[in-house]
Length: 352
Ligand code: 13P
Ligand code: SF4
Image (cartoon, rainbow, N blue to C red; front, top):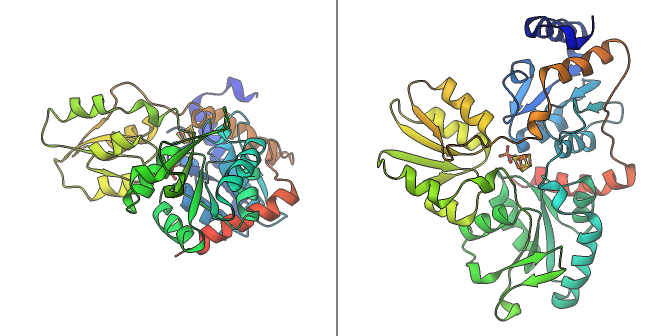
């Protein structure tokens, strides 16, 4: 029977059967933003850091069917052994933020910036970036980071060099650096479209150069949303640090998807929360915590359309193909790129 003709229950049944049959040969990690129809079939659900750590640790699975976005599958491919195959159930599951920095732009920026600042800059990249950017960063002594370890990695970077080039999310870069005590007037923005540094003042003061990239989903949370929520003084607001500086400053707390989840888990019954992150996660938190009042900070749905590309039918199709002995949608990173990218990933994983 074609997958397309199956009911949801039949698809779920087949996924379970194939999982049972493949046993430890199959590992399904999923990001917290995945759809509810996919999450129950994951062996582990986590934030980007946890998923990278889990991929690095798993040496038994021959097939890693990654329910997340392309950069996460690339990271898993880099961190796993050569015989392990990473599969992305939908090749349309990209990340628009990762696509905001390509390697040509980065090399051009580096030439400009090193002409201006000499050998004083260390590049760092959010894991939400392509393998080529991770390789660039790795080969220049830098590290990847995620929203869970950003502070530690930025603090480490300043033990290495005077300045940081932070790719590709300006918001995570600004929010993290500010938390570490770097004032806004020591932060510049690199615009990769116009190849120019946006900064008013004496450039010698610059400590952080923020790549002008952002997440289209987190950009939807605004200070106006916060003003509206604050009409109820009992409401607490927690947002992801991919939100703008103004939104993060006006919130009560911010952190990775994992931090948002644990904060809500530990919150007292009856507490009220507005959450500024992707809708699948906010809706799941609402469902899992009926004793707490949870709303999205933005009343309109803020879905990550690329995370949502992976549907139950895509997962099933990838698994059915594996059952037939065919690997589809395999994500492989070119060896030369992987050899440099792993340097930046391992630096991150070793920063305690
Ligand atoms: P986390 O690392 O917090 O899971 O975030 C990943 C992501 O893509 C958020 O947009
Ligand atoms: Fe990328 Fe934003 Fe989607 Fe995260 S939420 S995967 S940063 S587009």
